[in-house]
Image (cartoon, rainbow, N blue to C red; front, side):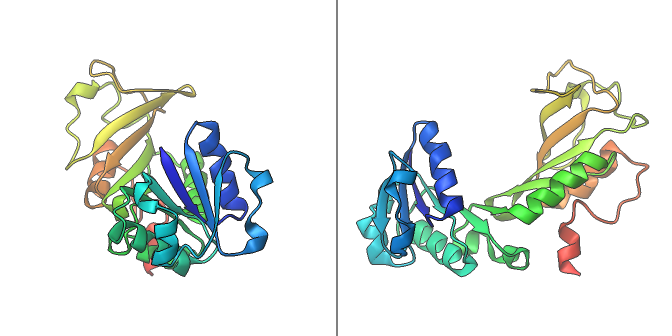
Length: 233
């Protein structure tokens, strides 16, 4: 897989190292000459250019990339790069870094963003995931929020305890993708039964999140899911 990364700062270089370790081809793009440090990421291609300009992206042959990652410290630049990569060069998948949570609402398919990564959001979700039982916690959004990865620690008093996975009548398009039990993750087995304390991971459309929460833990009072609703206040 060939991956272009806009932004060769600490974040961009760290992503590049991980991808190279997994045998992917990586191109780092940055307009700052001081950021071009080939010795820091051996094996990566480097390009001194503005990743928000069409001519630069043509020079980078970004149309031959499978993924374009916008990892600069500027949200405007990340949005512009994602939009150009998707609309002008038809890159199959775009991933954009969100630096300021207040800008997160813009990182969607209108701006060509397939996946938005917000470090504050992820840290908050992971904190809530660690301390909540019976609440649905949103961990990650895909495709501009059209599908979310959510988690719930199943309460021991849930009516779903002891129920076979095959017999679950999950609302909407919700899909159970993993069960974490005693610290070990496994794929859900149709004949397997749920247990109290199981950490359940689902993919679900946002419009069905509250229905899913109510189905799994009907007795829990909930005014929000994770922390996203707080941003709308």
